[in-house]
Image (cartoon, rainbow, N blue to C red; front, side, top):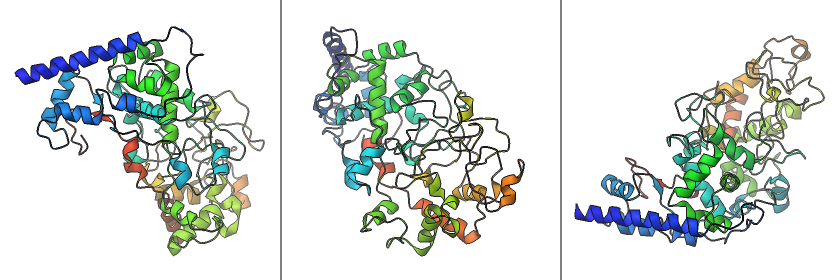
Length: 461
């Protein structure tokens, strides 16, 4: 009991010191104009503090086995007032530049597709702060959910539920989409927005919307700033990322956006095979693919009977497999959810009368893991998705797909034949889509939950 009391006192002392440090290091300026856009490119100032792995294990790993069991985690939580705290890496993690090593794209191609703004360059310290914010349940009104509650790493940062559950138990209106490769969305000269309906023009704007949503996380930004400013683990993280410990909503948005841009997946079977191609010619068979996977690749990229309009790549552009804008893919004859049409914008295509039923799907990387599919999660399997495009497309006025016969085009809200894949072609398409799975990405510790949770057994804690 005496040891436990000493630990509790030590923990509270550390918390008080860090909180006072945050106050003492407040910048005199009230605006954000003097804020540095460069971090120290190192997380030592945060990682070597009270929340580094080495320090936390040194204090709470009583049996010296290099991890924290349930009792040791309970003691840690007690020491910090009963809240979850992160265990930060002992050495800086590398978030920048990794994509340029693994990607099959050239540096110029990466630059042209990159949506990183000049005023928020990615840094290792900024992405680490964003990771902590992304997983922190203190960002919700009742401390029960985080961004990661609806975006699971093992699911390609998508939600396995049809609709997500908000902080008070309410259901969201749409399925939570995958967050992979959101950094590389500038395609065909277009810069689409984020969410299914593109309502957020940038990732920085997107980062704050779920936090403020009355159903999802239920926080007001001034309240959020005050709450995070008091948490003991943020002073060092904000200082490392932005030069001072001051917590602002703008800094929160920038850090979370940096972390989301770090969620880059370029090491799937597709990538490894593409890198072996001398000319990076996606139209040629890949040596590392099976015959079925090569058939699926041909159907996806070149189209049925080599007609590009009958190919999936018309909307999902390799090698990012992202979409340049929202499309209507004939899910319904009449839409309950109008998608992009709910926004007051002219049609994004001169050949369609409106934006009703148009949605911008996430990149297809790790699509094997990100079920269910579509904005409303109506399809549970990839086979059902392919069946839709083959046999279930409705001839809505805004459909962006080509059809297999002219009668389908003139049909009025009837179920059309779509691409009319054979059973062999359907299986091949599914096999190809599974080559986009990046096993390292879905288990990469850089993107994992850093918090020490009560009742959660983790080998690294």
